[in-house]
Structure formats: structure tokens, C-alpha cells
Length: 292
Ligand code: FVH
View 1 (tube, rainbow, N blue to C red):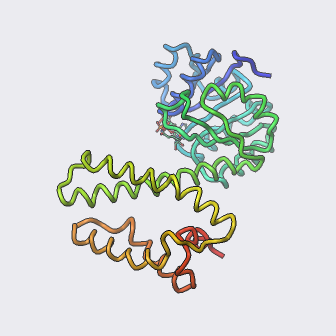
View 2: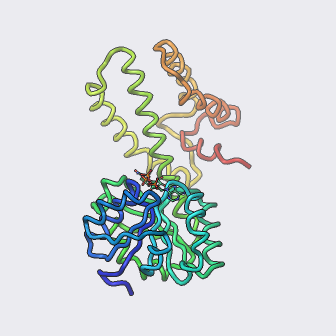
View 3: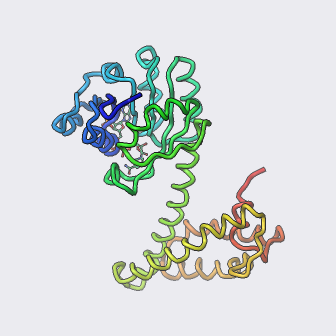
């Protein structure tokens, strides 16, 4: 059972890996750090980390190995030659990736006697070890997660999402999808209002309040419609949205703004009408996105 002083190794000291290692050091964990480009260990060593000359040396330093690289291709390439050293240890992979990649890495780890936990970080580096941050975890060995949870809590809040190793990545990508949709709407709104010379800072309070008000009601409301299968609405029908969308696309064109983010909505709205959902609300679109 890891105690407050359980040793941890961190592989990958980019912006996120460095923030993770710093949080572990601050929480009192003996932390061994390794990065492909050795110079990045300096600031962490100054905070109390032990530098490892090789990934193998870092892995050998303790029972828990946290990995945070750019991609899972990099993770695979880094860990594959170290399977013997990793055997009997737990890898927590916090690299962004797909559910399929997580399952493949989990299968590979199991075949080599390595415990694999996948994670999705719901935070930017500056949020690590602050109250708003949390990390999603999944993996076949929930007991291993529970064993290391006290250590992982030094990084951020912890949220176990299930024994399918791909689930943390699925939750992560789903949450990030919601974020990207919202961010792209904000990007388009600033581009459109900016075309009339309105300074962004002047428009910002209106946009913020509007987006907050819309998402506050829309997110739970849409969940209710999807779970019940009742998409009929008295708020905003697909028919009215389909009729309005050309106004947006025309206004973008007249303002000299690209419609590449929003034009794809037209075919989805058109299809919702031809498939007989004119009176339904926007929740219906989630069902239409499913491919057979
Ligand atoms: N930064 C963020 O806001 C997001 C928040 C949510 C989670 N993401 C994911 O975290 C992963 C790492 O992101 P990062 O911000 O730390 O990225 P970088 O600062 O660019 O650092 C990348 C590190 O990965 C090392 N690296 C890359 N490829 C390899 C490889 N083949 N072998 C070994 N190490 C590799 C790189 O090393 P170096 O270039 O310094 O030598 C950095 O340490 C990522 O999945 C985000 O999506 C962050």
C-alpha cells in the first residue's frame, strides 16, 4: 500500500509531465524523472527530483511509472524495449490517445506481466494539483488503481471510469469534443463580430454570459431527451434551425469570414428534416450522427 512517501517515476517532462512531477515532489513523493531531451530535468531536480540517465533507470526506481508523452506511438516505442524492467510494476499512461490505443497498450502490458492504467487529464498544466483539476482512469486491474490512488491524488482529483482500459480515453475525448465544439463557436463569433470592427473585449461579456446560459440548460436537457428518447421540443425545432442556418452562412460570406467550421451543419440539419425529425429538438442530431 503506497504511503505518502511512495516513490514514483515520471517519463516525459513536457509541459504536462513537468507539472505532474512537480506536484508529486511537492506532495513528498520521492520522484525519479526522465526525459528524452535531458535538459528538461533541471528545474525538477532543483525541486528535489532524482534524474535518471535512461528510461530504464527511471522505471527501475519504483513500483509506479507515470508516462506523459506527445502520442501513444511514442509511448509504445519507449516502453516496448523496457518490458522486462516494467514487469511487476504499474504504468499509468496519461498521454492523450484513442480508446483503441489504450486497449492495445493494456493487452501488450498484460502479456508482459505489467499492470496498465490509462488516464485522461482534464486540466491544463497550470491546473495540476489545484481543486478544479481531475484525471479519468480506467484499466483491467481496479485493485492496482486503488493501491496507487493515494499517490495519484497528488496530481489532481481522481475519477475511475471502468475496467475497459479504453474508457478513460473515451471519456476524455468526449469531454474534449464538447470543449472543442464550444471553443470553435467562440472563435467563429469573435471572427464575425470583429468583421464590423467591434473589439473582442467589448463583445466578450455578452458572449460569455450567452454561452454559459445556453450550456447550463442545454447539457442536462439534452441528456434527458437522449436517455428518454423523447426529442420533441417546444424550445427550438430542427425545422427552425434548418431555416436559420443559411442566414449564418450568408452573413459569414458577406463579412468575408470562412464558413468552413459551420457549413457542415447544413447537411446534417437537411438530413434531419428529410428523415422526418422537423419537430424534434437539437438532441435528435446526436442520434443522427451514429453510423450504421
Ligand atoms: N498541455 C496541455 O494542456 C494538455 C492537457 C491535457 C493532456 N495533454 C496531453 O498530455 C501529453 C503531453 O502534453 P505536453 O503538454 O506535456 O506536451 P509537450 O510539452 O509537447 O511535451 C511532450 C513530451 O513528450 C516527449 N516525447 C515525445 N515523443 C517522444 C518519444 N518518441 N520518446 C520519448 N519522449 C517523447 C517530449 O520529449 P522531448 O521532446 O522533450 O525530448 C516531451 O517530454 C499529450 O498527450 C497531450 O495531448 C496536455
